Image (cartoon, rainbow, N blue to C red; front, side):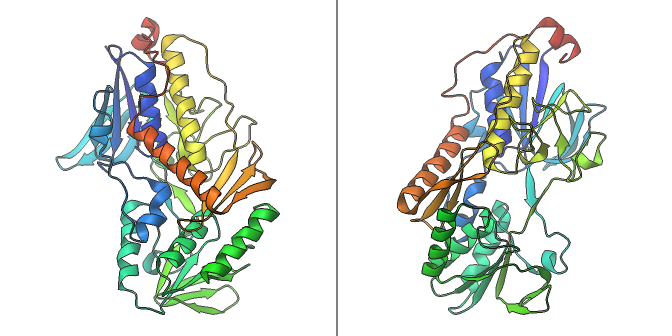
Length: 393
């Protein structure tokens, strides 16, 4: 009987995990199923571009994985029974269960409002394709002189504010940051960021907390009112709640707690990758939610699963960071070089050259999705009899 591997979620982490598993394991020994609610791959790092009217290339998952040995199942995951090793899904035909021997949980994250009153009712977000398209529609309805307020001073907020300001020069764009603008960056990068915001005419409200969101703006914690015709919420992300509703061990944030190989501490037949995992890097510190963490954790989990199934040497966790890329519109960007544990170095790349580097990284990440079994050594190993018969040891 073939070993059944089910991957939940086809974002950067899930799609990379599925493709790498197909490259590592012989199709005569394993069935690999990739479950995703959207029939297409969503290039999440470009949602700020989609929101401002740019068109993104379509990548249909059944086309992407055709001939790889990965079966794409377009369905929405509704529940996980980790003790019975079953996943409940729903599609156009109704509800059903999918059984597995090994599970790769990669359901990712979505926008989180942090419990701020009115945020869910009145704010928009760009955490996914549907929400980015809603921002796009709202932007198209705005007349010249209207104010767009972006709440959140992290990477997503900065990219959203600059993209909107560049695409719609007729609008007033403002950003609210809980701390200082780009205060996690090095001095050179901070200077360039402020210069870019000045060039684009973006108003910045620093060291500001939001108490509530209203239909026509926000109210700050100190009682000030900031008006807006469109409020875009980028002040946090939260993982999918399904894992927390199971017997799988999760962190206080709902992420599955995993070991150095991305394997669940409580359920050894479950692996978690990307934003869904409370995962250690090579130095033991938790990795941050990002594409820069998602792809390496996916590769490591796939290699670990393959090693356990084939009786080979386990891979080492050497995941670390090299840089943070921030687009500032289409012709400007910052590449902040960082230490492996994500602390900023004094050096940074800025301007058009940084924009070219950022674009190359985004294109490379998307290319790896479109060609899931290429550019890797072809080692489709046969599984060990023991692993196939009784599950991964």
